Image 1 (cartoon, one colour):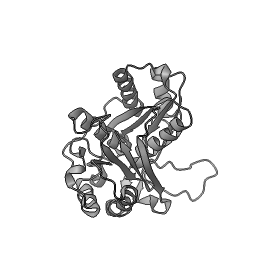
Image 2 (spheres, rainbow, N blue to C red):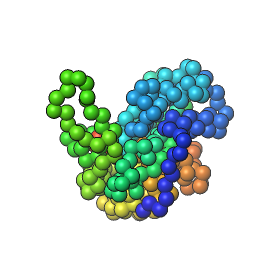
Image 3 (cartoon, helix red, strand yellow):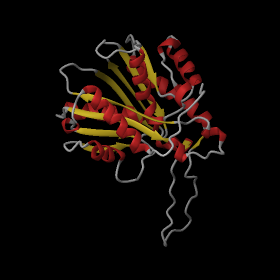
Image 4 (cartoon, rainbow, N blue to C red):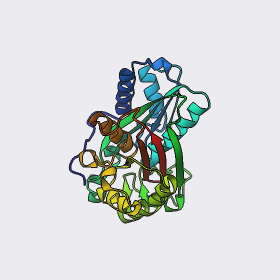
Amino acid sequence: GIKKRRVAVGENTSDLCIRVAQTLLQDAQLSAESLDFILVATITPDFNTPAVACQVQGAIGAVNAFAFDISAACAGFVYALSMAEKLIRTGSKKGLVIGGEVLSKVLDWNDRSTAVLFGDGAGGLLLEASSEQHLLKESLKADGTRGMSLTSGFRTNENPFSQNVPAYSACMQMIGREIFDFATRDVVASINDLIQDEAIDYFLLHQANSRILDKVARKLKQPREKFLQNMQDYGNTSAASIPLLLDEEIKRGTLSLGSGQKVVFSGFGGGLTWGTMLATL
């Protein structure tokens, strides 16, 4: 389902996420000082430390915000959104949740099983405390026993005392069939358990593969039209895919904040991790 992608040239993950943060604040006409937290979901940070979230915090002048990254691959945005909801429930008033990736820097460009699938991008949400409950139900899951189905960024331990160090590629490696089966079995079960008899307006799933969306729709017995899609323009952007899709569909008018539309967010990928959330807009 992928027709084109974006590749960052001269920019890193923090640069994309900083632009997202600035745009969100500008659109909401809020100052960075009003933020209580910044969460960034990413598996392609600029550094191990500082976190991308801390780089964003410093760049925009969010002097009152704490900041940290969440690494849960393509489920990262849903994981981060879940964490943000808990932070607001326990006293925080405003915060940013950003999913950002520059996956082009972790690809083996000679590996056609991965290089043609992944793109770069970032998107996010500004969350504020409200008397209304918008994030209704969630299900977060992980299975590390299947984690080697998708690996990226391996760093070998080459200290002077190392012996028998395993060798894995630092580049993205994926067993596509296993990930496809996982998405169309475990993720479907997670969504089914969460929505039960709820009437859902739209499903915003991680944008990995249009055939995955086709099969998920059939197994859930839902119209395919409810499964929004933009991977044809961006490829698989991991933690950025759901916020990019949400932003695009709001601008298009398919989704509208304050409308009360019921939507399902579901991300799934490396770890293995998967997360599903039922929300009203």
